[in-house]
Image (cartoon, rainbow, N blue to C red; front, side, top):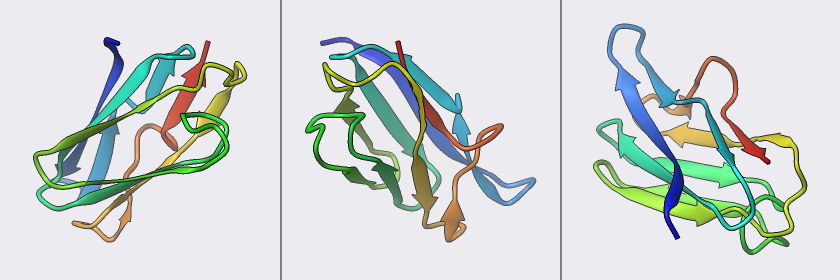
Length: 106
C-alpha cells in the first residue's frame, strides 16, 4: 500500500516549538499515513479510536528521533476531519501546525 500522506515533525529553533508539516493528512480508507520525527528527541502520536486500524482502539505510536512509523486509515472510517495529537519530548509540549494537526478522511 503506498503512503498517501507523509507528515514531518521538526523542531523550530527560532520559536522553540515542534512543528507538524503539513498540519493535515488527507486520505481514504486503506491509505497509510507516515510520521517522520526530525525533532532531536522522541515524539508520541495519539490518534483517537475510529480513524485508523484497529478502528475500535486509539492509536499510540512512539517514534525515536530520525525514525518514522505509519498507521492505516480504517476502511470504514467516516468521512470527516479529526484532530490528533503529537507530543514532543524536546519541548515537553504538543507539536503544532497552523492549528491542531488533522486527519481528513475522504
